[in-house]
Structure formats: structure tokens, C-alpha cells
Picture 1: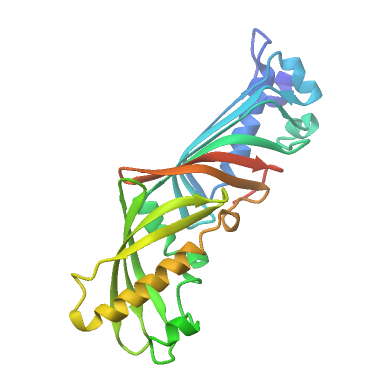
Picture 2: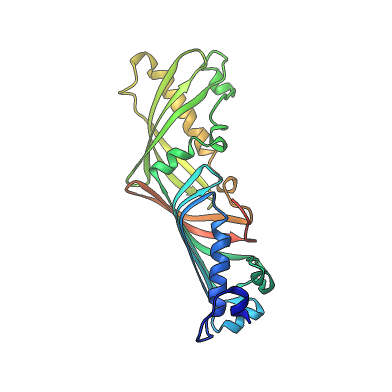
Length: 264
């Protein structure tokens, strides 16, 4: 009967539940992302009769080339849960609903290119353009200041180099160049610490203001990247650590899953 409902028949009759769940879960997870290169889901439920009570043993997902909210590119993402309680009736109708919140071990890998792409997203640029805070307008003659052309280069030891330009809204662009350390704070914030401004490539007449604007940008970034702003609906990421590895930034931690969201 269940094989007929799902279109997945197994001669042995032992894994129809896993097959059904894998199909439904794969379709559900793919719809969380604006775009995906690949999404693989493996749900374990043995014996299959446990599914009738809405109980599964584990849930694993791995994805590559993912896009969240149209602008945020994720090189790789994976998570794995222990036992999970789900709504069996919803599975039969092609949906995946949790009966209760759960946690999953998670890993997210961002590429250098993906990070730079994120700095073009509206959710990010709104914190970087037309800023009229007194500490900045004091440097620009009262005009709002914008930070543009941001480029990040990942370095070893959880460090990065950031190049940018500060637009003082008076026709003058100030080049910025600094090194920073990235770290996790309170499991949800990405902090940018110990900024070291490099002025060798900055024209001498602009070095003092470049120094001041660089420190201001570092402070803005340190207060900007809160993962709760980027969460999928119903899913919160919490980080235990991060590390730079080549041209990738690797986050590891866990996801608090209250419910399975239905779109990105």
C-alpha cells in the first residue's frame, strides 16, 4: 500500500519508509534554497514500521553550491540529527513536519568568492552605505559616508585582508587596506578583531583619514554579522568554531531546528 502511495516499491519490503522519507525530505530541503548544485538527503528509519509512530533514527543532509535568500552563496552545508519525531501523515502528503524541535550537528563552508558576493547583497550593503553617524560625518565635512568595493582575501590563522573604498560624498574616494582576525562570539556572532591598517599603498595625503575610516569600518563589521539575521525560517545556526582553510571559511556548530521551513 505504502509503495503504491509513494511510487517507490521495494521487493524486500524492508526499506519503504526510508525511501519515502528520502524522497520527501530531498524535495523539501531543495526548496529551502534559491539555487542548489546538489542536495543529498539520507534518512534512516529501521524497521520501517517505526515511521507509523513518526519516529526516525537519524537525518543527514549535505548540499553543495547553495544560494540562500538569492544573494548568499554557500560552498557546502551539511547537518545530521539523532532520533527525530515527525508527522507521518504529512509525509504521506509529500511534506516534512517535525513534531518537536530538534538539534543537528552542522558544518558550513563559505568560499572567498561567496563572501565577496555577500558584500553586494542588500541585506549587507544597507549597513555600509549612506552612514550619517557622527564619528563618520566628522571626517567627511558633515556628509554621509559609504563603504564600497569591499574585497576580502582569506588568510591562514583565521585572518583576512580587507580592501575597500570610503566614499565621502564629496568626490573623494579613500582607499582602505587592513588585516583582521575573525572569531565566533556567543555562538552566533562573527567578530572582526585586532584590525591592523596598512597604509603603504595609500597616498600620503590620505593616510590619516584612511586610518580613521578603516577603524570605523572594522567596528561596523564587528557589530554587523549576527547569524540570526541570515537564518532560514525555523532554523537557527549556532557556532562552536570557525577556521580559515585555503580560500574557504569553515564554520562548525549546530542547528536548532524548530520546524522545517518551506522556502528560502
